[in-house]
Length: 415
Image 1 (cartoon, helix red, strand yellow):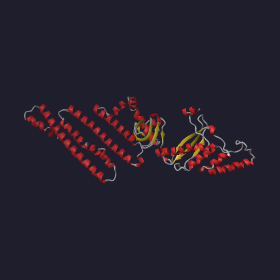
Image 2: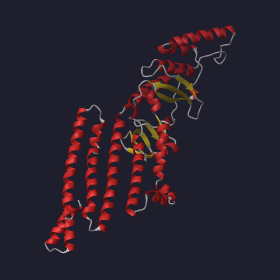
Image 3: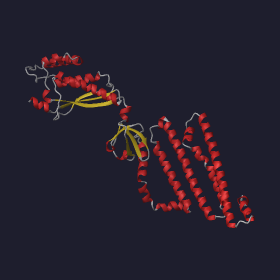
Image 4: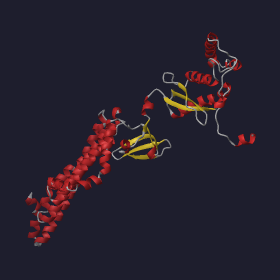
């Protein structure tokens, strides 16, 4: 090989060319020849590998090889042989230029490290894309783990490249960096926090891709579309994107609606405000009108008989309504709401249905409806809830009750 690399040099010397000029001509000629060989070799290997992987992906049932091709893994692997050829040939080409030879060899070594990192990146991207196709891993923060591996690979690669350039052994180089660990931790603070947060989020199953979360501090209210090492991306319902630091998921409080989505219904929790002055005991005349309401007719008949028997047995003076046991319009209204909800097609009757009276307020007496809609989709949920309260607001006057409303200009005009 040495004779071949110096053949042109010896020929030029015999032709009367000076030694220094012959060395330069010999070097440039060999460099041109090597560049041509590397270019042709790289082209052929790239073509062969890409075609081979493409044929394999067309015949195999798995998607992994398709992803290898789409992430350019075969193309990157094809560069290995030309780099090795160049590294082996450089000492012969630059044998007369030892300083240049050392620089070129180090450059090729650094390029080889970068090539190795490119191959690792393409493999990790392939693994990431493949895992996202698996149903059991589709909602996991795969991006975070891939980024961690990639960061470690780049850090090691950069350290090794500096070791090659400076000529310092890798372990000595790492020892020297140990003294600057505080600075390194400061520089990579967000990355370290994100890495720890990603692990905790995954282990504790706090957030998955596709979850609906509400994070008031960052103005996020929508579906998680991406979880990576540094950030969590949320597509809000107005189609804007909110970016949240990953470590904020474990340091701050947020709401994950997955429990509701996985359940059999979506909660309705809203109150009607009733004027307290409209609440009263029901007279016989009032009960006659209320018996016409089909949903509570049987209930009223049963309660009237029970109350009448009790008052008769205890010889209660019913000349005034407050004595003994009595029905109130608010109590009958609560029973009506309960019966109405249990018969409503949009309410899941297998889940809790409760109509309760809350503590009186300056705005009136709250009657709260606590139930679950059978349809969890937002637009249908809102329709069901509106349908229920449309009916109940219209039903209030039938029980001799009044809903509370703050005074407006029309009230003052009447007075």
